[in-house]
Length: 185
Image 1: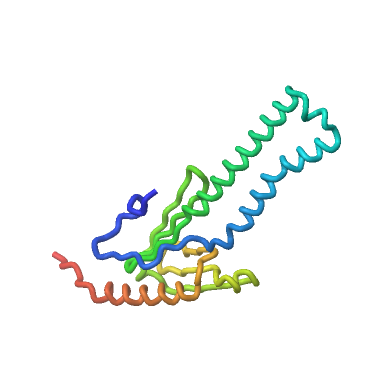
Image 2 (image 1 turned 30 degrees about the vertical axis):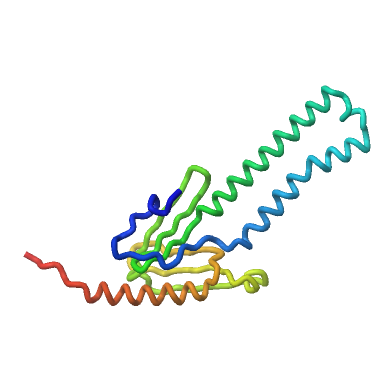
């Protein structure tokens, strides 16, 4: 997936931030994958200790190898799908707008846009020991008008991103307030 396929960039628009969730938030998934991948080894060790004849017969050995292979391939498939969902969730901040790409599942994606001049307020929150150590948190954006409020979890350097976002919103607001009005006929 290329960025140009997600958003049509305006000629004057420059990407300021391209943000994914902080990598630390993906560590529990990696650890779970490692534990689940080790289960067949533990089962084979226990079976070898309790009933070694079960793994030495040709038919039972082939059956267990097939079963373990299907299990490992399934675990790898689920790990890959979870990595794709982590990697394809994006927050794109340009000098004109904010684009949120949410990969809901393997075949479902949601893309939301917000013009920066419509931002009224933003809040950055960091909760917990790990989030404080690795400097990531939640970014909440309040909008003007009928648009929904935006919230992004696990944003790296969330306080700096919030400050820059508010600065960009103020610049965009000045541009839109000073823009020439259309001529009425």
